[in-house]
Image 1 (cartoon, rainbow, N blue to C red):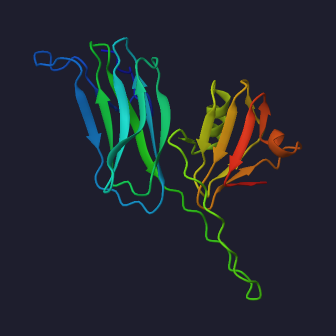
Image 2 (image 1 turned 60 degrees about the horizontal axis):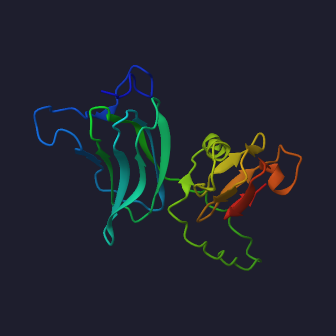
Image 3 (image 1 turned 135 degrees about the vertical axis):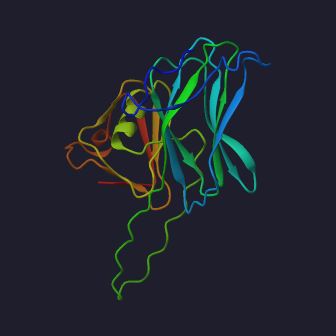
Length: 237
């Protein structure tokens, strides 16, 4: 087969994978669907599903993530098809607060070189800290206007390193979602080498981009290169 030679976590542990060439005496032998489904979820807000995947082989099929809610049923949030190289790759998927179940679907390809694997699957919810009470003499603040819905093209970044890699490695327009309440401290501007559009957005209470260690102003404080930067729902310091 073409599965990984070691797990992602320690190099000597375990991982979950689909065996493309087993059982050998059943029909169909290839193009088989393998599913891993979560128990019932009860989310209070949007969450992030993070995992590492391995898809190496000339016959590679498709790995996709689906979410279910009680109104619309199952919908695809993320997918990859074909050979992705002989290494573990990381991914993060935004789960709407209405999600009740999540499942991985691994559809093997047309030959035995299509083993795919998963490791280090985790869920996270970001709860922003409660704001301090306002002085009695001040009128209550009006809530900020809601942001327009984020499109499925947004890719979640749970850390400054993931945000930096998503932008630096992009070769086409990229949209990055930062979890509400997260604080991303930039020790140096993020460099992008392509003439692309970069959108960084958050929702709810919003996330914080902290570039206080930088002396340059506005977007040059956070981003350098030939790309353009659009920010939505963020606090900039």
